[in-house]
Image (cartoon, rainbow, N blue to C red; front, side, top):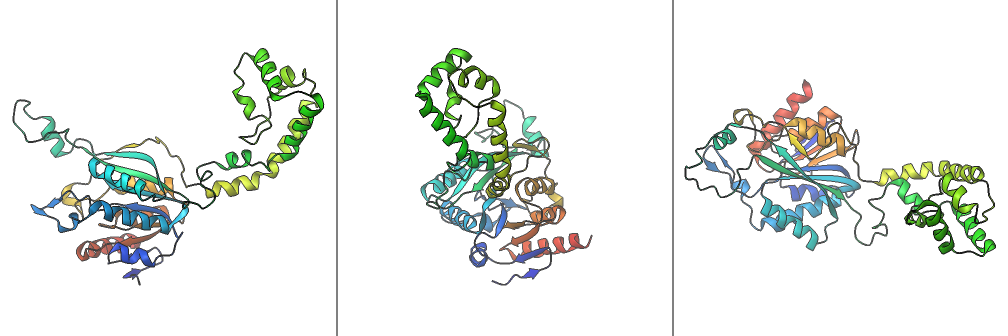
Length: 357
């Protein structure tokens, strides 16, 4: 599908998101920031919005999430806004049942603070009657997902590991040291049980670290104190400094591979005050282009933490275009989709104006 509007900074589609996403290539997008209809009957100016009532909503949600998985790069990230806990629970269950390869990483909270409505509830007469039968909601939720390999892709167990963890768990890594260690066990006629007993006697510890020393599982070499207290008395005939130099030489050889592995991880860069509660006041209702408009500073933060500079950002429910503003502000390319013609027109005008500022 051809974009309705295209510039060097963004492409915008006035269409149903499923039709547009079907034409996007697989493994194309770095980050999806989705603010879908919540299916709670949002009211604007006393009138219920038709766009916020969707038949088979949970199925519909799983459908667009599955399509986002296809479009996302293997190390891509997805954020989904919502505010209805029961529907969130149903959506997560549907992801599990359908085995959609998206892994929930964080459950984030946008704390809107004391807006006019919350102040009115806070100062209510405690003896007055009300139909409210739950705590008054002063927040919205943002679910943070990592894209995962498709089932059976061959690297299911490795997708979440750091580059260093991958190298240190690879049987081919540090192979010369591992083979030397095995040959020493054979020469000395001892077993790892003998090493464990000596380790426990000398250190008073359980010996859990021994499963890593000279092994494929998170490979390490002992520190010198352990080497001198345990391995040398048992007859291992190698100076520790010689062992350490070989280890360091091999580690340097693996550095390029470590970086390559690291690039395969889902993008995440910690920022200041890195926590899952974001206290940012909402825009005044008379200053919003959309009833559900999100603050640009929060969106800028999501983009900077969860996508590389110059990355491609997709918002399948563009609304007022705030994600596009955040993308331009942070040097990312934006793809925005909005079905409602009125919102699309307002978002497009806003993005063009911001591009010229």
